[in-house]
Image 1 (cartoon, helix red, strand yellow):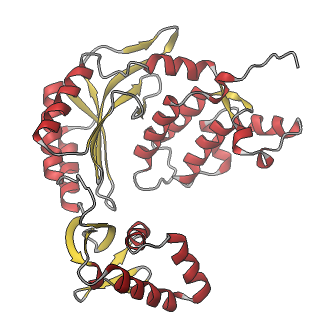
Image 2 (cartoon, rainbow, N blue to C red; image 1 turned 135 degrees about the horizontal axis):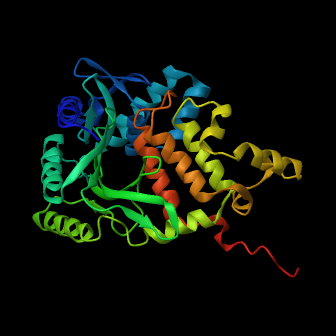
Length: 361
């Protein structure tokens, strides 16, 4: 659990480091390099995401600018990008740039684009109200300094939640409350007690995305939270999805997805993957021994190949890695992303649930 002192330090840091939003003329952003922009005499870094935003606003594909730089050289690529920006956007076109305290542009949006970003201060005030009203205890916090996204996972006071027929599957439920450029979102948060793994389940009906700041929308939002609290913040389909994940073997596609998630968000070495996906090494060895080369299969074929792990094993491998510090370097925001992806995997129908093993032909 996060102490009051730790949470106040987190709040202070998130407010201090949140990106600043400013409306500027697109034509006033001058590329010095593909990673540096000069605006009003000040040099600003620019992330790949922000560069993609600018390219999208002037009507190009990001891969086009990458190819241009590779073929023609960076100087010509910058010249062409600046020319297209001036010609296609027009001198009067306004955009909103998000700039971090270390002077890096992380996002660029057209002024007419729909955005529900609320300030960090307002977000924390809303969270305080929700936490107090629903007796939520803070389990973990996350702040992405590049995007300004904030996430807080909480557990509610109350009884444990058991999965019928599986004595080890006991959960403590709560709420994950996040803020992004798309608005704010509340999702059920499930904490597996046997190994203290956390999972954010955003694909169930109980998730609520607030993308309008009107009084009526806020009223509906608080009413929704009151309703799901009556069921202990546990999604109605949670039990059946967990039972299905436990009973069904993981497909090769599901196992590889879990492996990609860990490798794509950390510096984990291949020899450490067996720790989080026990049996994966044997699975790949047996497949090769039987004449099945995973690298030669299509994604659709991989969804029909069973492994020695269950789908639940894969999900727990992802949440275990995301919920603990094993001394392996992780990307910024990796834990929250992995917990979200694990929740998405759980909500999806198991690949092997429809495979008929015995057939006459």
